[in-house]
Length: 228
Ligand code: CA
Figure 1: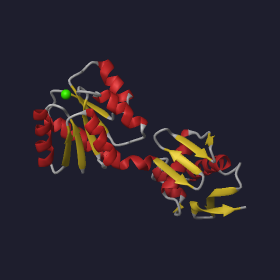
Figure 2 (figure 1 turned 120 degrees about the vertical axis):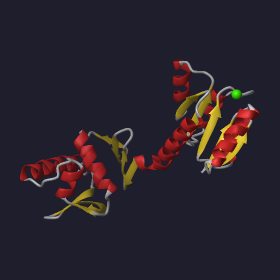
Figure 3 (figure 1 turned 90 degrees about the vertical axis):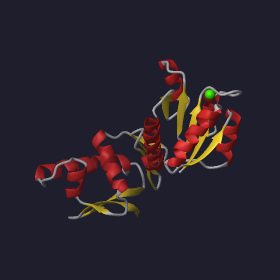
Figure 4 (figure 1 turned 45 degrees about the vertical axis):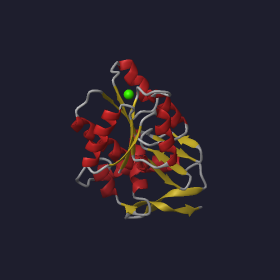
C-alpha cells in the first residue's frame, strides 16, 4: 500500500513517514500542495494524507482540484482546524475522512485501514450487466439510461441476482438471503414470486432483451440475455 503524505512541517512529515513505514506502508512525502498534487497526478497511491494548512495553494484548494479532475484516491485530511464548519467544508470538498491535530497515532492507523478497505471495496458498489446498472450506494437502478422505480425489496432482489449473475438462484436462496427467512414455506414462495414478477415487469417489460430468466422448478438466473 502506497501512501502520499502532504505536510509542510518537516518534523510532522518525518514522524508520519517513520510511523507509517514501521506499519509496512510505502510512504512518499510532499512538502507543499503543488508538490502533492504533482505526485498524485504522476504516480498511483492508495491513499493521501493531506494537511490543510499548507504554503501556496492550501489543502482545501488541492482537495477541490483533485476531485474536480475526477481523481478518486481516498483522502484523509489532517488539520489543526476543528470547527464543525471546516469539517463539513472539507468533507463537502471531497475528503473521505478528517482527523484533527493533535491526534493519537493509533487512531490515524485505524482510519487509514478503514479508508483503504473502503477504497478496495469501492468499485463493487456498481453492479452491471448488459445495459442494466445498479448503484448500491445511491440505491438506483438504471436500464438503458432510464431510472427504474423499484421498491426496496425489488432492489435487493435485483442486487442479489446481479451478484450471482450467470448462476441459478433458487427460491430457497432468496428466502434466506433477501428475506432472511431460513425455513421454506409456501406463503413466502408466493411472496418471492410476486416480487419477482413485479421486478421483471419493471426490468424487462419495456425492453426487447430479457435479462431475468426463470428456470422452471429450479429458480431464476440473470446472465445470458434471452431474446424474444
Ligand atoms: Ca501545515
